[in-house]
Length: 401
Image (tube, rainbow, N blue to C red):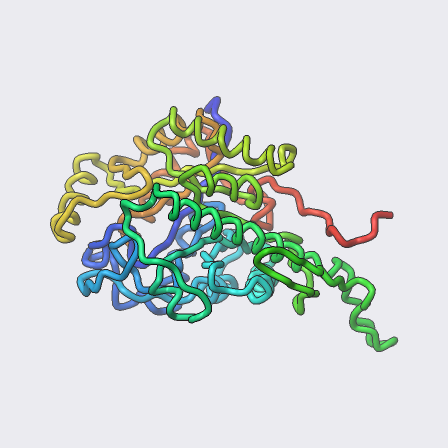
């Protein structure tokens, strides 16, 4: 048995994979990309591997290799299905795995999202979450016409203007999450009576106006959807700098981070814990997951050769905000356990080519971790919060007896 604590594992699903040339692989199935069967098959495979959850990528503009604007390329996957609707379609076909769609909060209303994720939690019997994302891309703002953003370049990231804009958007996201959480609580758990004999379906006294007033939102409530089975579905966010770390510390149940090595991971975890304490949440559980892009084969050289071949098709070496790992499932297991020592409680893996690397995760990495006593052999809870060891929260509006 391993001296390491059991790990949590998630997989990030994006098109045919995270490498831009992934769609050209024989296993990629690009013709199936916009079908329900494609996504159901991926999530079913992830559930076969006993993973905690999957995330579904989403955005409000076409995919692009440029960080701040469209690129006009036609040699890469362009177009995607709505992540929340994909998760809802997959939910009845799965039983245990968590379903966490990405939601761009900058241009969507918290009331709409609250009922969408509450609905996903109901139809999945308590397996829903969301990944909060913000955007300052002018082309995406132009789809909505309610606000504008200045054009920026990647090298402008550390300028005062861009840092101020990022802080503004992430502050808005924190308010957004607060509104959504309050709306989930706006129905008490026993608000629905459904008594045919008396003709009473709902107890109106157990529906609450949230009356949120903030810089970014003014929302009265209550929701139109009863409280989700989990009470509070999982809220997650990707963070790679101090201001996003504050969002994770203030608002999230799970934060995804992109450490370069164990020392960097330790520093990142410490910064998130400090942000959590500053937000008054020091006593609450908060998972920090490391993100890695993975290319896995039974032979390390084969994984490196495969990535090199894909790089050749793409016309340049693939890089990412996250670490790019090439090697065997056993080598990845070693690496994850080493990173775990920095305080990470789990990992979200991004398959380089989903049609190849997802099965190397579920049928290679998972057994390797199981042999070390570092991963579950069966699902031990019925809800996503339960899988992550998170209690079902009490309703903030319910009277304490």
